[in-house]
Image 1 (cartoon, rainbow, N blue to C red):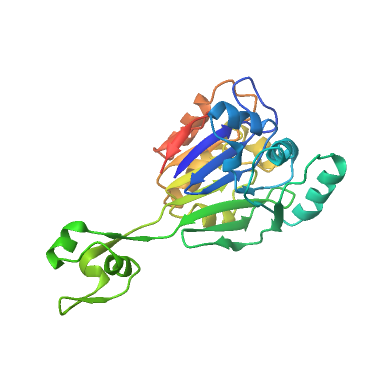
Image 2: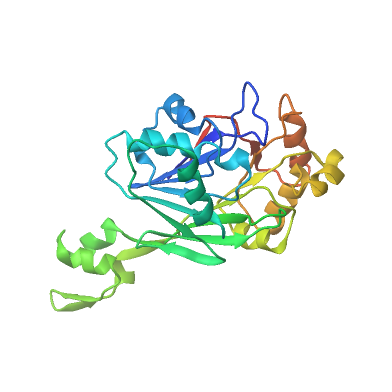
Length: 296
């Protein structure tokens, strides 16, 4: 599981920071959280093919989170893109996507589907599930949670003790099925162990609210906005944002393992003040930079 920060700025980009976009690569899936202006170019600079994108999760429809969508879709439609692009967003996303296709002329039509996510699980397969929860930002806004499913792993040392050959019997045990071998009943726990799945949380453009805690709970990696430092808490509340200190308080209370701050106001030439503001509350914190990668 690899996370690439393609854009870390809020409404106004800077020379160092593009508008917000975060890409999660997991197996054959590529999940893009938000798509600020210039995101497709950020993919090229990062050396990631646009065809890796299989899902786009839109937090809300303020321009700095979606202005990159038309260009990205246009480029994908001109490439050898064999997947069906899935686009998820809050209520109103279908109508806004229709308007986008009315506003722009696309030479080729990309194969895609648009779905509106509501609170709870909105996608699930054998490997992971995606959850969305309503945030508070003055318009329909979602925070997202990626939950990898627990995996049963084979302990080869124990397998040798039971003299189980590599093949279908091991496959059954890994699926949690009891088998019989050499006249003995072997239960999955005899030769396997369960590895906990990873949890990734994505929260941006909201005041601190109950839904933030649902999204951030026990996260291995909490990606959270820190538009302002706590010195500007009044401005932060006025515009429906969180401070770096509030992000740290959220991480602390939600038992998150690591906090990565994102979505910085252009007023900050560097993010040192924001990181220090958070570090007073939560130790394991860093400020994201464009093209920074994290492995989970």
